[in-house]
Length: 172
Figure (cartoon, rainbow, N blue to C red):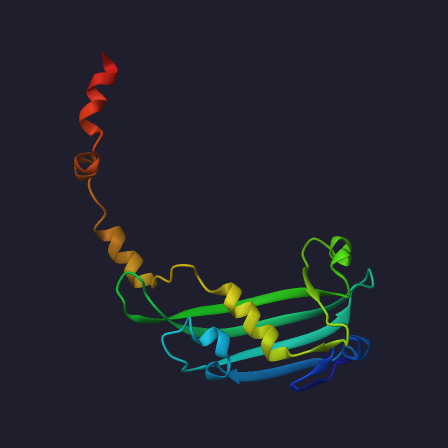
């Protein structure tokens, strides 16, 4: 980070100025402050650590690289117990002014449509990415291990199949 400066994250950033200055920010935000994400969590204990790095790539595409690290407290849908779901993500977001510009982005970029005023709320961006990272059905790793240990036998599976009795008729 010799050329880039690291600063605390303001509530609002001018995206195009940050790209021109190649700025990098490190931040922490309590989970309790993320009101949209909170509804999906068991509780709001913990904090999110993140960095935002603004720059342009070799093709002169402006981007922000977002790195997020957090353990989200979720409820396992099998055991109904609280567990910590680790999220470690690195996302390169191509900054676009118009949806039509999305097609020109490199394939490994996600599009981030910047508002007309060029302003971005970093905490909202982090919260959006965390909402997308949530599992549809949260299951703790311990619950999956229990299911594997007690998988049904082939005989039990056949008994549970209502069409198992008809299988003998196909041979005739």
